[in-house]
Length: 226
Image: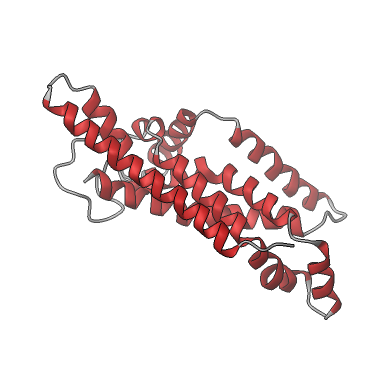
């Protein structure tokens, strides 16, 4: 059940954080500053929030999910939906920073050649720059998701500590994740839970190793030597 809950939670976090993070990084890197109060205001707003989110402890994200998603929007407590959005916000700074770095590695000659052939800035970004930077973007995304898999403090704050008898069948069903399950089993006084805790830790480590191996393979497979 914890493995299924982890799959739902991390999948939702990826679906939320990847398009928002890549879009934010592309907006800030590929579209230069223009004259106008609104343009600079939006850019400064994103810069400030990215820097702040990167320095915030993980438990603060749990407080954000509890106060905003559960208490304000009324989302179900202990659900993968709330956990996925919370972890998505947590991984957002990592994805944005990695995406901006990957976009900067694309040579300016690629942009100039595309613009010289008559492409607009948006067409150049979508068809030339983003595909060239995608290996770095994917690697940063996988590293951010790998970090999110091991987080337990934000999920404990939003109530994902319930005793789940059956695996969840949807994103709104009560669920738990492997780090939270490890935390609960490790705190149990019964000796039988020592083996269960060790097994859960092994499964979580396998997930992390597989994600890191996937990141290395994708980078080697699609990396472009300029």
